[in-house]
Image (cartoon, rainbow over all chains, first blue to last red; front, side, top):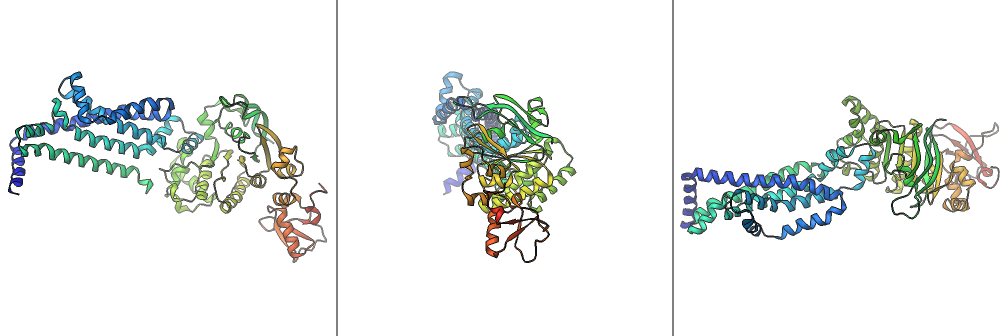
Length: 217
Length: 318
């Protein structure tokens, strides 16, 4: 018991005395996660919509991303290593690849799940394609789309820890160092903020989801 | 009378289909008429309807609405001027009832005040309580949802309404009420209605004119009474069961067969029925009261005519 309390106090003291290193790690961790998520959204939302509308695209693209999903996060990071070397960029690429499948698949499902009669009614009333997209399809697909982004966000924040293995920086650095030095307090300096971030993003996205699904309650 | 919709040699063959869904069809729909299109599934009746607002594009021929080729203006503009109601209703689940009804006014950029007044008027017209405005579609029953569907289709005050089996998915009791209410709305506002159904009774009851379709061609286009008493071929005859006397009595409206009231007609203590009721009801009334005739009234209680046993014998006195 004594030991555990000490470990937390040591972790706290480490953060205080090395606040610049801690803040730098936080900055890298957050920015790499946010960039990976944003790039994945920009690529996968339009791609998911396209898959939902063009039947012939569905199988090849969904198949590709579904197989990507099976590869463990660490494996993706390690596979990138010989191709792109170490640092921020390869870590970002690896994380983006990880973030893609949930967003793509949920966008596809969100758009496929819209009753065709709703679209027929909308165009029958004289809405153009773009207006249907903006006023009908996007809002109706939004709940699933957001839950895809939420899954990706949590996954990316957790996996960004592994980015430290290929020199990407972030909270993972503390964990690797802590493991190497056999120092539990340092491990905690990395692990606790990551857990907290993951939980916060889960809560944040759930809140947005609740807002857009108000009509279902 | 002015023609609202005119088909000229219109055909539609779907890709890879062995034969056309609609085959070289010409017809005209007069303004203000309620025309029902009756046919089995695969008869081409829905294809015929959906070509008017270009949900389906014909492969040959021209369709014009109020004298104008429907291809002469942008498709969205055409559709905003034609009301469209479908069986699955297709309300927007994420929008409230009033937002649903406001769809076309919003597209047309109406002022808020004008749209709000229009919503109030339409909700009253289709018998929806005012406090439903803020509800979402899933909070309404199927029948109520279709009332919203009709209000939404009429929001831009279109002269023409296209309806694709609008009451097909609604239970029998609610359906009867919706039919009665909608028929009344149509008569009140003088809209031109093209109404697809596979229900013989519904087609006869609602239509001033009725189109019977089979295998992509119009078999007969006439008043329900004329089709019933004089089916043009064996297909029409079997579809409407023209040889079944009870069916006939059930489908013919009293006001279509009644004769004028004569001076010696005593109208005290004589049974009365509504003009929109069927001859079957008239017969029932005659037998129940053991009366020589029944008086036919309109919904305001004014006497329109009478029906005796002679009018119920459909084989004579056409």
